[in-house]
Every structure is written in C-alpha cells, then in structure tokens.
Length: 152
Image (cartoon, rainbow, N blue to C red):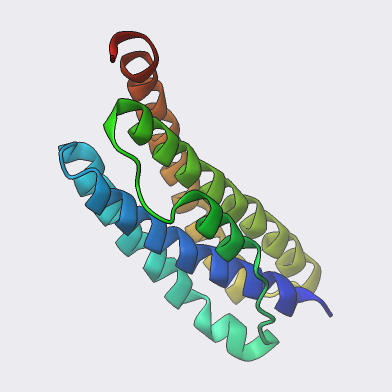
C-alpha cells in the first residue's frame, strides 16, 4: 500500500507551507493583512499537520522531498516591493495547490479503505486548504494591478 507515501508527502507539504506562510508574514510586515493572515494561516496549517499524526501512526509515513524542493526554490527568503509580494504570494499559492491536490489523493484512498477517521480529517482540512487558496487568489488579484501597472 502506498498511502504512506502520500501521507508523508501531505505531512511534509503542510509543514513546508506553514513555514512558508510564516516567512512571507515576516518578510511583508509592511502589508498588515499579509502579515496577519499569513501568520494565522501558518497556525492553521500547522494544526492540519498535527491532525495527520494518528493517521501516520496507523498507516506509516514515507517522506518525499518535493515540497521541500519547492520551498527551497521559491521561498528561501522573501522579495521586496510590490512585485516581490506578488511573486511570494504566487509561491504560496503553488505550494498550497500541491497540498490541496494531495488532500484529494489521500481522500480517494480513504474512500477506498472506507476509513471514516481518515475521511473526516481530510474533509475538514481539505476545505480549510481550499479557503487558504481562495484568500491567496484574492490577494494576488489585489496585488497584481499595483505591482504590474502602477508601481515603479
């Protein structure tokens, strides 16, 4: 069974996403909504990772390097200025998208196994990740005109 591979991928992507949210919050303190919401989303993402622990105990966990590689390539530090904010938000969106689709794959395994606990954890936290993506998309839309047209 390869569920352990995807639980590892999900756990690592959540851990990396939480760290990335914190990094963007620190790097863009001059944007109050980004500072506050990225900090809040980091906490929520870390709670999602904690919710996986009972499932990891049951099914095991095989760690993959994809989320770390993405984090290293995209968020070794934050960029400055309006375009920097836009690019950092896009990096968060990319990592959150990886997390979201991994929740979907784990959900499918839960349905195949008919594991109610797994399905409950996935259902709750996948919806939360979808809300993270919604905020990121909205904030990217807000930042894009300023960064691409109005900023010098």
